[in-house]
Amino acid sequence: MDSKKKGIILGCVADDFTGASDAASFLAGRGLKTVLCNGIPADTEKLGDCDAVVIALKTRSVSAAEAVQSTRGAFGKLKELGAQQFYLKYCSTFDSTPRGNIGPTTDCAMEDFGVRYTLLCPSLPVNKRTVRDGCLYVDDLPLHQSHMKNHPLNPMWASDIGELMEPQGKYPCLVLDKKAMRGTSEEIHALVEQFARGREHFYVVPEYVTGGDGEKIARVFGDLPFLTGGSGLLEHLADRILRQQTRGNGRQANSGTQGRGILLCGSCSKATLEQIQTYKAGGGKYAAIESSQLRSGEQSAEKIWDYIQQNPDSEVLAYSTGAENASKIHDENPYREQEAALLEKTMAALGRMAYDAGFTRIIVAGGETSGAVTLALNLDAYYIGESVAPGVPVMTPVDHPGLRVVLKSGNFGQADFFRRALDMTGSR
Image (cartoon, rainbow, N blue to C red; front, top):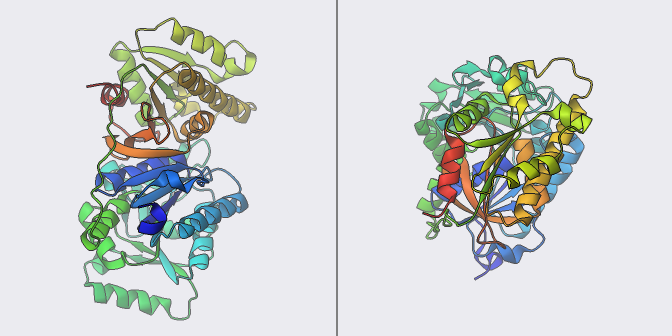
């Protein structure tokens, strides 16, 4: 039975590839047979009889108009596939500028689907992203006081979700605090209906600090046709779907394979820095990439690849030294954008070289880096397997069953993530 005959239960659109793999991992981990597509799929036969489809776009750092157009196209494809419910997935740190793109894409989808309101639900408690009294916290710090205040692309200036949405979205926010969310479903919906009077559209921001909060949000609002948020709510939506449907519990793809691996890291996050240091301290081989040397020509993808080839018995971590100099990320550097583009291009080239050389395990850290590498690999659909860390699954390309790909957001994963990823993707 193909996907059109069976019908997809949940269709999700994510603003980058690591966010998409994060979302897909929670759906698959709860038992939904999930396929992740790199971009809007042209060949829908590859999707098989899946329960959920996640489409990865690269819309986090493009113009708002481009993000809206791409997101609308992705949701349109999911409608064609017969999806019953839709989800817009963005980063659990609300990675967005005052111009967007979370607000414009949410508004467009809400209007296209003809719904009066939707949720703004970025929480992911397992990774210490929570919403209290309408404010987003990261590692128990308000968002604008966390490491996100120094993000190289989208530095965060506020923590109140209503304040974050005001310059980029069209509509007001209703905050449902802890006291409100303690009410019955009927009482909560009464508050929503009261706020709705005289308003064409609006957003609802529920308290979401624990897994129990997520369960209740899914129970109260899980029948909305269109929802938005991070990946935290998706696992509870998946549980709800499985309780209501007579299918699901799809077997996850086998995570292990034979062959050599490579590690590519362009992230500058605090978590990634610790992961790099742990890998190096454990004796792992590495190649440090200095973006200014890429610009000068002292380093290149070809020179780094030569070093990797000189170590045929070891997996090599090629990483950006920007992670080790993250505190200087906002120093004046007239070449910063040029060097960032060169770094992405270099990582993408290394990923492609490894793939062409027969490497079977490609592990990438950093959202922008992951997007560049996946584009270079030109693989368009993946089965989702078990997770190396919450939100970071092992993925198997539909057309290349012997290959394993792991993509992680910079802030995710344990200190020994790189070694874990190599062990999990290796033959066991």
